[in-house]
Amino acid sequence: MSILTLLFYAIALLIVVATAMAVTRRNMVHAVLYLVLSFFGTAMLFYLLGAPFLAALEIIIYAGAIMVLFLFLIMMIRLKTLPGMFFPVGQLLPAILISAGFLVVSSVMVGRNPAGWAPMPAAQASPLAFGVYLFQTHWLAVEIASMLLLVALVGAYVLGRRVRGPSADAREEAP
Amino acid sequence: MDTLLGLIVLLIKIAVMLGGLLLAASYLVWLERKLLARLQIRLGPNRAGIFGLLQPIADAIKLLTKEDIVPSAADGFIFRLAPAVVAVTALLMFAVVPLGPDIRVFGRAVPMVITDLNVGLLFVFALSSLGVYGVALGGWASNSKFALLGGIRGAAQMISYELALGLSLVPVVMLAGSFSLTTIVDAQAGIPFIVLQPVSFAIFVISAMAESKRIPFDLPEAENELGAGFHTEYSGMRFGLFFLGEYVHIQVLGALTAVFFLGGWHGPLLPPVVWLMLKIFIVAVIMIWIRGTLPRLRYDQLMALGWKVLIPASLINIVVTGAFIQFGTI
Image (tube, rainbow over all chains, first blue to last red; front, side):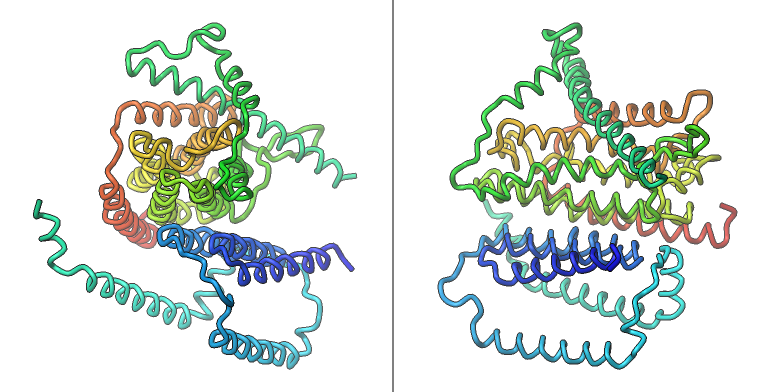
């Protein structure tokens, strides 16, 4: 067992534990923090597997931007902790079904290719190589994703406009 | 043997860097108090030692010996964690800042940087975006209205200006062709990027100042409306850590401005490390000067400046830079 293998399992354990803690916390801020810890684990895993660029992006986008936004909303809304079961049955069942399905599909995909079981050689992808590969081989997927984001942006804009009626300004003007 | 030697060299470099940073941070406080006092026609600290030079040491002793109070309604663990997040993220950024060209010690090349990551710029950016957790969580965990408002403002402000900060550095990466801070400095051996990218420089300085939460962007701690904002409930050295984080952040800002736009350690006559320190010093003095001069922005002005001016300007700047690289002579 090499040191890389040890590191891999330690980080994997960290990710699993942090994520489990995140989905079972009743305090939303604690849940967000455990999720951030789990993203840190994922970033470390990316770095370990030789993708420093992805590791940095994982931290910047997920831990640094999206989770800050979550935290911001939780702090603004100040949710009251509800009594009763944390997971209502109506949410629990679909969650279990979807994750079981995902587990089956991913294990079948890993198992189908015997090369997937071979240990990976140590390598590191430079940001330049990663960019060239992404935009030469998978440019269509990148374009589709950016189109999706544009649609989401326009949608958010439309939703944001509808709430603010023309009367809001008029009310503000009146002393 | 080589591994052990490398480890020893690394530990020495980290120790020197941390020691220097903390010392500089405490004297930056002195410099700021002195300069602000002169700008406001006062004398500033002048009791402890000649010119008040022992004041930072007196302050440090005072902070360390004060009682550490955790409010009973606070979330204990997060309350204790938040100041450390602010200080650690600020200190860690210096791990990728190159202080000079490689030097030779006993025939071995020793790089004058703790670690030359090939994603160094993104590393700095990631740490700067994590620094907001200290502010937001400190404000939330205090369980106080003023602190919470400060924390929320901090989170909103950081999200808004992070985008402009990141986009303003894209042209620098395009010109240098690398995320590594060492390569970016090397690319400025001839002309510093401030000459080629004045717009980028302006956007970077404005949004980096917003990230460091100083006047005119100090809404998270606006003392005349929020007490002390996110650190209202902190006392003793935990407050000291927030303070330390702020002053290390000024040095970070100076170092990053120097590395990305002012040519890093490049300069005639003087040794490279001196040039870098000189550039950091100049940026720090300008920031103190700005603090003594400008009023605080209103919240809507802050948001409008970030989203409606800086982000569009940086996007246009990226396109123009791309056109110049493709068709021009840069």
